[in-house]
Length: 198
Image (tube, rainbow, N blue to C red; front, top):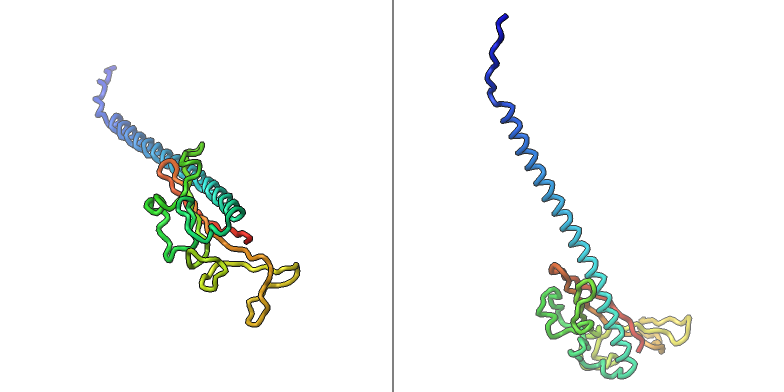
């Protein structure tokens, strides 16, 4: 019997295998980049969340300062005190709180500007919610955000024309804006209203 000579291979299987390897390599690279992007996004969310939580430090520092100033020298709250980040009226137009220039000379840094354990630096500014600076909140020309209270429980405070004025302790509102600068250029701004009995 005559033996058949082996056929010459054309190499098509090798070509298909190489193409499949390239396709699998590209899929692997795409998967790695997708995972890296997901990790980066998750990290950015974590930094943002930590920065938002750190804005509480600014609010607490502002509240402590207001309580002390109202107790020790309430008349001082009629005037601006830029060194303490305090302003006795709201600005006619709110500035861009995300612009760094807004905070350079108008705010106070918490912890002397040192970063906390998460790497966040917190600053704050306080605005008395009145239209005019330098005036008593009770001045008729000054329009302030006030809540009037009744002298005794159960009595209402009405603004109806002809109604007797309330004779309880009024409550004045202040706006605290807190900014946190954190890792990866994270910036968080929060604003809260604080109510304080006069």
